[in-house]
Length: 251
Image (tube, rainbow, N blue to C red; front, side, top):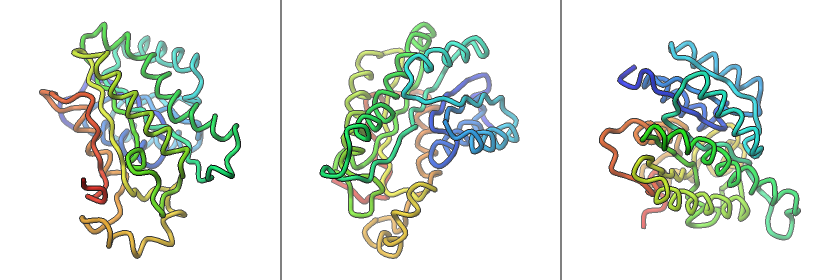
């Protein structure tokens, strides 16, 4: 561990995949971590792994789309730890359906979790960060926010739309919350996780050929960038969007 002891972080969607990797990375930097997810069993397992690193962990079973729940859980975190230094908005639902297939309810669910959920937690933590005079918000978007979904992507247009909204949220809040709070976004490219393994299966042989760095990404590739955004001092970045895609979308 290094010099972030005493600091706290919230990671939504932290029970598995990219969220778990980010929570583990922040724990290795000495953060106490609140991990938010609906996957109760996987959340418990991840919490156990985090505790094994010697940090304090608060597992929270919650739907990030629930506005009042976000406010209540943030209040409980503040009561317990008296500070929130970092918020990582990572929770998301995939949506593989195309425009002629998707239902209104499926569209609404994507917006509720992938965009409104980020708003819910940003609004809940912002007063505490502003009062403290410091804070970092890291929003997980996707390269599909720039390009639309690729042929191997696990999700289609609706996911891309919500992830593009996350970039607008990030840039807008970066201006509103400056100079106390830095707000940045990460756009993962092809990352092999439990959720994407099936969609990548038929492309795994070909994907490395179109990625300049020659391989599919891992959750740890995203976590190292999130840890940088959470810990780097001095921090002279806000409103930035960082593509982590092995160079697949160089422009």
